[in-house]
Image 1 (tube, rainbow, N blue to C red):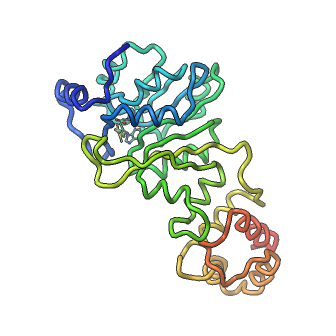
Image 2 (image 1 turned 60 degrees about the vertical axis):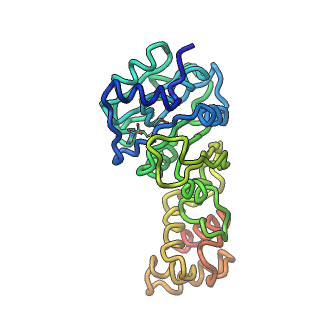
Length: 290
Ligand code: SAM
């Protein structure tokens, strides 16, 4: 079995030998603790019938574990300096393909057709670059890729926002968007010491299990999310004030009728509404012709 990449010594050796220097702007914090890697991979429930997609393999610490557990692994890395390093570190695995590119610009459906035609399910497993966590996750969800789970290391505060319940401080449009598509589960909180270099924020592993159908029915998905955005526009304002700023004061009567129709008290704040209530609200606004 090839040697573990995720030890402080092996990581330092690889980095030195290749003269690699970390780029903070690419969110490069590499994992050097194999226990954490095992936890991440276990949460994804992989086996030799499954595929894994990794975003940002770095020098291959997690990729190696995925290659051991899954049938097919694809890892997308933006930093071209890492491509030859990955080629060397992962040379013993014939089930891994490294794709050089920005995941945000990739046609992932094409990649899925090419790589995962013969597997029984695909999960995203990654230690994400923190500067683009939300855009990456939203792309995965909005592209409606056929995914089973998304298991990712992210900033702890962002993980808490994704899993937050209505009425809590962390609850916002990100919570609604994630929970619309997935069931979130906080897997573990991770100390700084498992990375080099150490990030200056706390980290957590979150597992998002994709729902077969979205959590709620909506009149129109884009309209539903616009309603949610508008309701959270200014957190200290009431639902009524936020919705009026969106819709316009001239449509006051329409808004009044829609609010009555929805059965939701307009003096509540957006942050107290459940997904069901946002769905009701968006139906009422939609049907009122707003
Ligand atoms: N998986 C490795 C590990 O756990 O040690 C590295 C994780 S590091 C937090 C994030 C990685 O994502 C870096 O290798 C970085 O170069 C890469 N990256 C940053 N932005 C990216 C993007 N837009 N597309 C693909 N990879 C990206």
